[in-house]
Image (cartoon, rainbow, N blue to C red; front, side):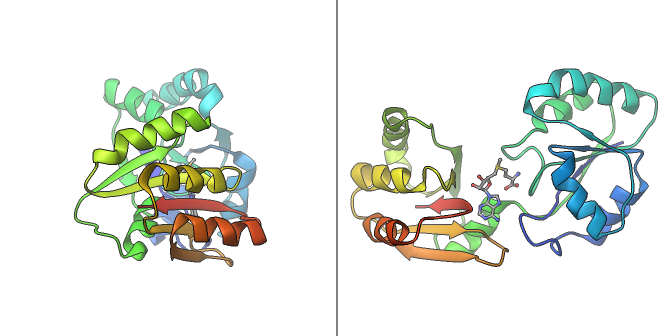
Length: 217
Ligand code: SAM
């Protein structure tokens, strides 16, 4: 069985009893970053073999994991945060398992954008999750322009390096609209900011933004 196991997006307590049970029972845990996952495993006294499975080794390591699954081994897939497959490695091994008739199941848990969406106060009945915007300004603005016809709530992931630039682009493409920024959700410095892009930029210029972000429009 391939277990897709969701892990916390910050607060180590945000994990299910079943996720812990599964991580304790499998033969191998495939991690986006073994050092990162070790913190979680140590916290719950889980001592199981781990192996790295990430963007750049996904083809070769995917084949290796598939061979173990074919032998009848149980493998858990975890990412650095949240649900594997949501904008992190996972998609490839999940599809490899499906094509090879390997049993696959998911152990549900947090996903950053779902938590940001529910706490944003923006309509949740229909929404568009757009992942990460392009790094380059022109491409980013063009992508935002493409979304201009989107009537529903729009959600992006963003990093601390680009949040100010992205807010600037949101303002230049969509004007003075209200934006919700979820920062460091579930962590010590969690912040949910509801304001106009220019105001949020002003705040971040005074105190440089750190951590991880979800942007909701
Ligand atoms: N698999 C993850 C999930 O289920 O949400 C997403 C992985 S993606 C590579 C990482 C991005 O998710 C970060 O750059 C950030 O935009 C967002 N993210 C993850 N944890 C977060 C948190 N605690 N607060 C805000 N955003 C977070």
